[in-house]
Image 1 (tube, rainbow, N blue to C red):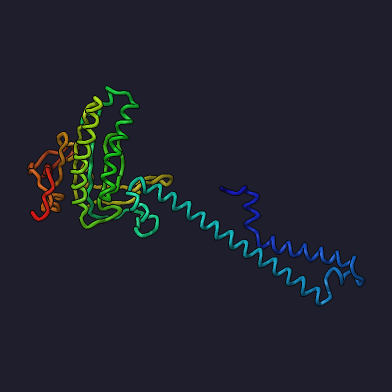
Image 2: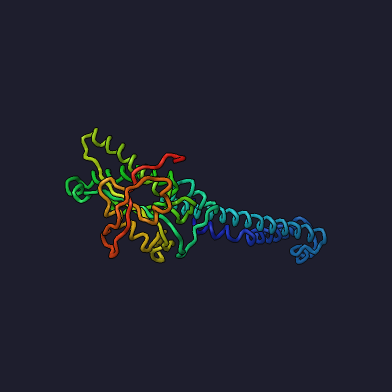
Length: 307
C-alpha cells in the first residue's frame, strides 16, 4: 500500500522533524521556566544555567538521533519494498518464459540473463497445428480460443519439464528455445525428447477430444541447432527476450515442411542426438522459404539405454 504524497514528504524528512521537535521542546521549556522561576528573561529563554543548557542539548540530541534512526528505518523499508516490486515484476516476466524453478533462480540472481545481444549455440523448436485455418473457419472464436489454451497447456507443461524457454505464441504456433537464456550441456537432446513427449501428450489430448466427439488435432514439429543471436528485442517501452538468425528460420521451415504428427530435425541437431534416438533420413528437402535444400531426419523413438 502506497502512502499519500503528503505522508511520503513527511517520512522523507524525519531527521529534520526530530530536530524541529527538539527546538519546540527548548522553546516550550524556556517559556515554562519564565513562570516557574525568577531571573533575567533572556537567561530563561536561552537557558544560561549550565544544568538547563545540558538538559536541553541532551534532549535535542535524543530527538535528532530518533529522527535519523527513523529516517534510516524508513529508507531501508523503502529499499526492501522497491526490491520486492522489482523481484515480483522479474518473476512475472520470466515465469511466462521459463519453468517456475528456473524463473526463481533468475530472480535470486543464481542465473544471469544478460541484456543485449549475445552470440550462442542453441536449439530451436517450432510446433504448429495442421489445418488451423479450417478449424478457425468452422468454429466460433470462443471455441478456437479454448482449444488453443487447452493445447498450449499440454505443450508448455512438457517444455518446462525439460527446462526449455517458451519464446512466443503466434496463433497456433509455439516457439521454444533450449540454450538461451539458460544453457544445458544436452540442450539438443532435451529438445528432441520434449518433442517426442509432446507427441505422446497430444495423442492423449486427442483421445479425450474424440471421446467428446471433437476432431483430432494434427501438428508438425521442426527442430534445428546452430548459432544465433539471443537478447532483448523491442522498443524502449516494452522488450522481450528472443533469438534471431538463420538457425531460427530453418527450424520454422522444417516445422512447415513436417507432415501431420511428424518431428523433423536438421542435420545439425541429428549429429548431436543420433546416439540417443532413431530417425528416418529424408535426404535434402526443399523447406518452404529456404533457397537451399535442408538435410532432414524424421525422429521416431528414443533408443533404449545401453543400445
